[in-house]
Amino acid sequence: MQQEGEEAARKPKGSKKMVVCGGVRGWMRPQWLVGWTHPALPHLTTTACTASSLARTATNSSLVKTTTTGSALASLCSLREGQGSQKGLGVVSKWQGKCHIHTDVRLRSEEGTTHPSHRIIFSGIQPTGVVHLGNYLGAVRQWVELQKGGDDVIFCVVDQHAITLPYDHTTLPAATRATVASLIACGVDPDTAVLYQQSRVPEHAQLNWVLTCLTTMARLTHLPQYKEKSQSLREVPLGLYAYPVLQAADILLYRATHVPVGEDQRQHIQLAAHLARVFNNRYGETFTLPHSLVADTAAARIRSLRHPDKKMSKSEVNPRGRIDLTDTPDIIRGKFKKAVTDFTSAVYYDPENRPGVSNLMAIHSEVTGQSFEDITEASSGLTTAQYKLVVADAVIELLNPIRLKLDALLANPAQLTALMDRGAERARERAIPTWQEVKRKVGLAPES
Image 1 (cartoon, rainbow, N blue to C red):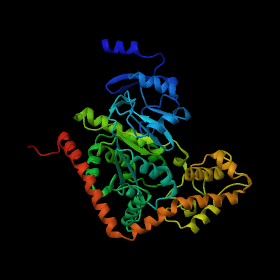
Image 2 (image 1 turned 45 degrees about the vertical axis):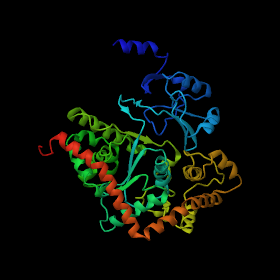
Image 3 (image 1 turned 90 degrees about the horizontal axis):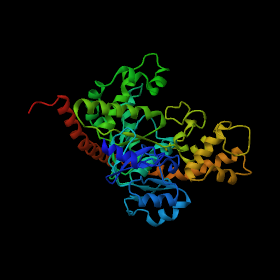
Image 4 (image 1 turned 180 degrees about the vertical axis):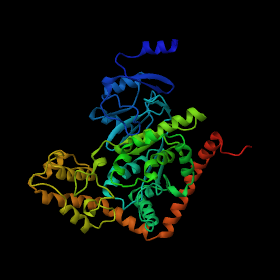
């Protein structure tokens, strides 16, 4: 109680959040917040938006030290990128064009849990179709960047999730292999990341049953994915109803701290954290509470070329609505030529009134790194028909090397099989100890 009183006395006026930094607890001042959440630390908002406030942070070790800024810190980031800084400031790095200073410490999340600075990142993708441009820009490209950060990264092709809805069992094995090959072609390094097929690690299904016994029907019924997908079905498979529990098992099996997901999956990560908390309270501390990494960028919202009111999707009936990684340059140009726009020739960003053109601009921006303002200026004088070909050429330049590498991997099945075998072995090395601990704690292990 005395310690709490001392902390309250030291708390700067208007401070919002407590953190733990190098063993010293401290507060974050809201006037330093810049309204953007660091993708690596979603439970903390970024701070210190000027060089002067950063200097003040460096001097006072009781204040948090995670930052993203503009020109005020550009010189500091360029001088010290990749170097450990003084006075507990952590490491300067760059991520998606932004400068960051990361604390090499333990950070207290909003839920009151403590996470190590070393992260375990888990994410999965279903082999329900060819990986497309939206998958790459919205998820896979982020995975490739995350594996460069020195954290444990685990990427799973979740074929057990793929059977929750009607599917073609004769094509699933080939689709699974193609998805693994696509991830490698996009830049996922199987030597750095653990890349594997879900069904080859039986501990996923075993942990799933334990967690299912801790889950209530009411909680699953309220999840938005179930509501959306069940509306078009006369009979709802139990697997569709309960698959978020399997998703939780996927995450908790590797004690993941962070999970890159789309906005529509955020509540599923919250369910995983809830089940981790329930298990820990009942059986003793076992699981880390995971947090979602939701990319708040245009890349996470790439829309269909034919229906710009909907996301680009593998399940879209009309294949002209998506750009697959396997598409040749001629096919890509043909799809962009048929992209839905409007009757206004000028190119400018207005997603509410011009969703089709704005979607093309979002794709163009994500592929080239240009801002919407720069694209509008460069496209002055072009009709939307001409602009479609500009976007198509930019996409071809990005995807053509990926397609060629994907073709080479699929043409060498022995190499791909060896990579998948090794990935499964590495995954099981991580999964078995967790499952053995769970078995012992819930009473399923034989008495010694």
